[in-house]
Every structure is written in C-alpha cells, then in structure tokens.
Image (cartoon, rainbow, N blue to C red; front, side, top):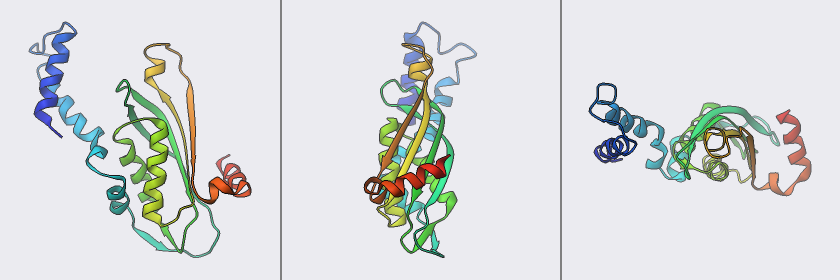
Length: 187
C-alpha cells in the first residue's frame, strides 16, 4: 500500500471540500487516514488462496455428517461504489467437514480478512465461501451475511435497510434437506 500517495490524496480531498489541511485539527489527518487505510484494507494484500493458507489450522473430525456453523461473526467492510461503510454486519459460515475441522477462530479471521477490502456484500459471500472451501478442503460451504450500508442510510436515499445475502456451495446448494437443517440452526 502506498502510504505517501494516500496522504497526498487526503490532503487534496480536504482542500477540494474547502478546508485547510494545515489547520490544527487537520494537520495530522492525512497521516492518520493513511494508517487507517493500511489497517482496514489489509485484505487487499492477499489472494483468497493466501488467506485460506494463513488460517487453515485444522483438527481431526470426531464424527461424520456434522454441520459446523459459526454464527453472527461481527465484521465491517467498505462498499466499492462509494467507499462507504457496511456496518452492523453479521456473517454466518457453515461447512461440512471432510475428516478435519477448522479452528473456530480461523473462520472468524477468514471473514475479517475478506472484509478488509473494497467490496460488495455479494462478493464477500463468494470470496469467503472460496476461502473456507480452500482452508477446509470441503466444497460444501454456506455463507449468510446481514449488513447495513451507509451508502443507503447516510447519503442518497437516506433509508436504513438490512441487506441479506446467502452464498451456497456444494451440498448446501443441491440438497434442500441439508439447507433446511442449516436454516433451522440459524434461528
């Protein structure tokens, strides 16, 4: 990430909106914003395969045909259209283990890293499903996301709304009974 370029552009934005980037309250803002960008967009530094590799710690699976569900992982991201915050985000990830189970914290870490990119909510679901499939070795993955978008609530139409998306892969996509079991677990 190019911190100097971010600082320069933030100074330009401050000037463009009619303020003085050298006034006391704004002097250090470009540097702070650049540091913030390094943190909140850290996921841009990695491919989905690299994220899966970083967080693929797994353990022997005690029994077969279990659905593993990690529900309501709290995350945030930024919309690629307006660079506006996606907030109150809850991500639920389910998969059918294939002989091994991922460490539960690794699933949350995967979700967090996928969200640390300029994103669409739909792509977060697709990217996270791919990461979990790669990390777990299971093609049977479901990702359910609920989020609010400040590009709707704070600008434009100014109507807060909850957006839900669901990404289904493998047996979750093809087996209605399995998907129904998952939906029961989500309640």
